[in-house]
Image (tube, rainbow, N blue to C red; front, side, top):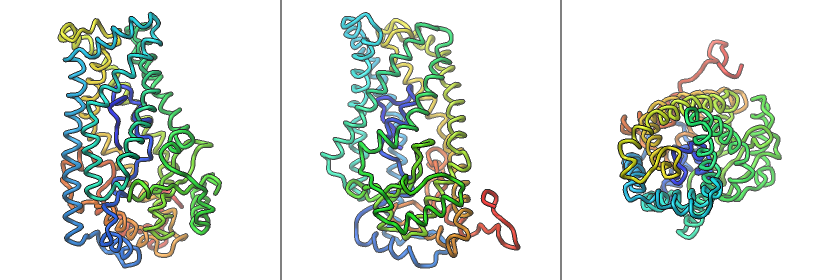
Length: 446
């Protein structure tokens, strides 16, 4: 679940959802290149019998190289982000922006209206070189086919969304800090959770269309729509064909993806054009069935509950530690206290470190839920799709070849950053899962 913009980043955890405005594909669904070799490999994997996840030597080397680069980028990104926040304190950038804001107005909202964009854009610009390098890596491996002009436009749109959210959240944060110095961490936690739920609800309607074109899947591919409708009905969900969409991703990326997002009336199924081009209908139905599993198995509210609990702990630890941090270094930074707008980078820095330390826990929980969704996809397509286990295995083989998924990733990388099981493990599970033998039934779909 993601390219996290540090402009709103880690203190304002609600922005985790806002800053990743373009739908974030499963890491194993990203394709390496538009080369004819890879395309042919993906097409072959669509129909041949799969017994294990394997890659030709040249694609294996690409997958291994890309995975190693991404591991290093994840570590460097953490250090780089911490450095960017520290520099805003060391160079007294934050107090300077606070002084401008206080001269601008005595009202906190108007001060936040000036202070938040200045600070968040400064951090975004400081971290922009890493964003550019990451995009260069994606272009090197052929994953991104987006022009630099288009990429810049998306970056600017993402920052504008983050700034709007940032102004509101920074204002509310310092309202509650000044209103309730002892319990601001709890009140802001309530605000954060409400904001996350709000963003999840509006994202399909408001944010996603800013980055991609959506059209009726029923008009684009009636056969696929009918197959998805049968799967949805078996899952006992209410997503009519009117809420199934084709998304034009091919002009920007060669990635493959199909997903379900939204809440209630905004819930929808989205299939990328690249996926329709590279996978057949039964394989796409399995991928969508996996995504449907997240909703049926209540992974969204469960993850929200876990995230909420972690945020509550982090906010409380931030409350306990920020006083000591500012007493020790605040004078040199020009920060008057936690109620001072200039303390924002220090709060963000603390939460950045806490989130990084806890990342293995979140990744392990996510891998567990993704495994359950894989299982649900097998169960919900069993009986709808002939030889559904083999179809699922073929789907993962396509995703692995086209997405350059490393068959042998670094175990430390998996432990720290993998929010999905390895593609090898997922494919192996698809081939071995058979609760229907001897008259049995599935765990989730009876």
